[in-house]
Image (cartoon, rainbow, N blue to C red; front, side, top):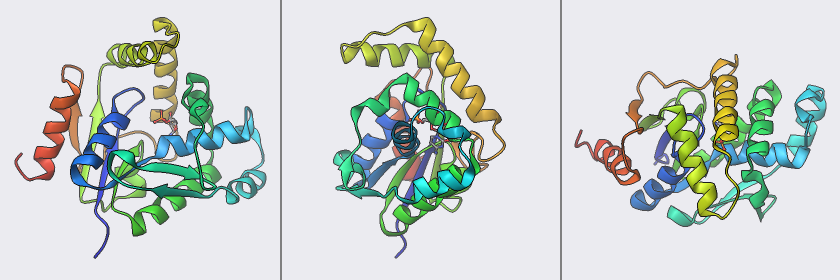
Length: 221
Ligand code: C5P
């Protein structure tokens, strides 16, 4: 039987990764953080890679081998068999990833790699275009959104929790810049699939979001 795919799309800082991890744990599936794939590519190729010729990018990306290990909350995304460095989580790498993510050959490569992973593994796939482009036939689709300032506040709290510096104004600006770029690009822009359930998480706790999504999957709403 075909693997079960659940898609989770939405803008930066909306809580997709946290939800994807918990959902994968509840459902016993692996989770795929596709933003981490773009971040790993941006981090490895370095600043300015988005301006390289398509052929060069294609060749470099051809050497990237993503795989998944484990399942549920403990799913690990590996590149060349190795865990991804923590440094890919920086706001700067996020902006580079967003620039690289408009390049057609990069999108084509990532889409292929994501479809390949979903062919053999049941997944909660999280990103920007999971329900629209990569897994249009997914069994369950969700689109998370929240007020941009609330997303910036969450990101600040997350950084502070890790003992890292958090500048609210800079983070809010960076989130808006990435949103603009992700929503307005011509290939695979950030938008809900027509058959996705929309969840506005601005005034919901993580637990409430998880419950709403699980209820939908279990056919309760
Ligand atoms: O989700 P995250 O913030 O880690 O993603 C980093 C960037 O990667 C996003 O701003 C977006 O430009 C890009 N991305 C994408 N398609 C996806 C996932 C991420 O274009 N499916």
